[in-house]
Length: 322
Image (cartoon, rainbow, N blue to C red):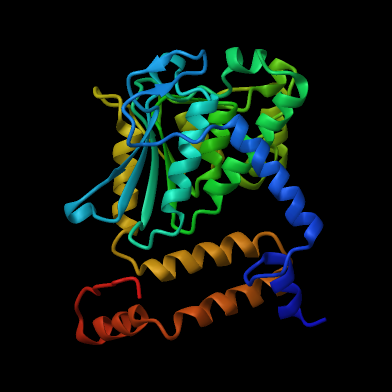
């Protein structure tokens, strides 16, 4: 079997007809997930809380920036009563928003941020989790793992702005993003072993790939928390900055980073993400083949022609994503 054919089969760059059994299993799983994570309409001004009461507003919102920042979209988390903990409604709303922007070519960068001062995401909603049976808890965590995979699979660059606590599932959400910014005062950690668990929403896989296996094992085995400055030293976050009076320093740094990405050719950025993500999962020879296929996708684009023309004419390029 050729290297290219192996790469295609192993990375899913092209559609492969799934088996009937696999499709059936996915349908059953999807039905269960829909029951655990109810679909919530974002046109509503009121939604159900985890305790059955009615909230005055949605727990997650989508904010599209305009003007010079057009193309940057923010996922705003504001579950104030529960510190953005990962409850059914909260997770269901994030899932809906992620799905809504996945195929939106106008979105060039996504920022995940909290509107709750001092917290990014506190992790699991333990009050809700305590009311679940063992099978329900297991399926709920499978749903969380699926959500983090959906975030990681977004085709455009994603940035987590960590201005406060990001613990357990909160850090797993940040790890599902491509890039992370943090305030020095932020606290991050996969603390599941202190609760008799292990990171179950991708943390045991993404943290080693981010900070290295030895350090990831130390952090997970001990359940240790690290601040923003140490997180930058470990490579857990890309940038760490002193917190400001408005307590949104990480968000401002995430915006600065997004603005550096925004002028670049959007298809090229997306293909670079595919090349790196898929290439990291295979051997170097297969990775080279993936890079070649991604590069070939860019050759016929108008953006590539614009990039060459702008270079020759000594002017800034104007990319349109085509």
